[in-house]
Image (cartoon, rainbow, N blue to C red):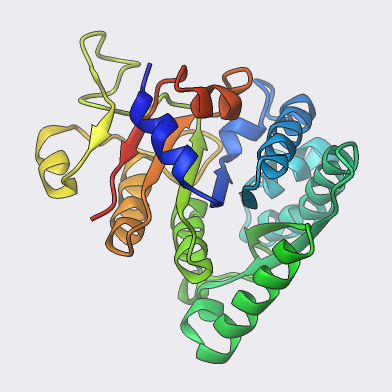
Length: 266
């Protein structure tokens, strides 16, 4: 149990939730629509308790593979961008169905690094987010992978969600991944690795852990999650990392019965 996580969630009204590709993908690489239905229900429960929610959803490529299976092995960048274009439609279709079952509407924002660095565009993003949330609509954000290239690419949705949380002046950023939190070492290869439940100093954390590489479906890894925490905590926004594949994970985090790592704000 981690009561600190429950305390942070209880104190937070404006919450950004980022869902990684591995969380949205089943073992065969296709979309996990049952998970999306469950998350929509749990988000709706939080909204009924007075919380405001923004989703940052990976999974366009996963959804594209689900839709156009013959492109799954194509590595050419033009095919990958086209696959994301196809998959983004399917991804939003599934999110729309999941939230429609909760009598909630969704809105889509596809963003690039330029959007955050341009003062006028970032102001427009902020205004759109506030308007959608104030009207009870769930904004769902993803990087615009179909047009992004290195110069305008954020590159991972951990950092995208951190930028979103800062822009919206969120109270909390939750990252759902396929790991339970930050460990002292890779728990998949080191059985003695220990979960670090609370992080008060990120520089000290970096000295004490081993950081591995990204996983199969996602573009991030532990490094991008720490980078996201470095961004948000400076602005007084705590970050919570937990395993999105666990049943009723959002409810259990709020109840203090789910493990995770919470980065406390500076």
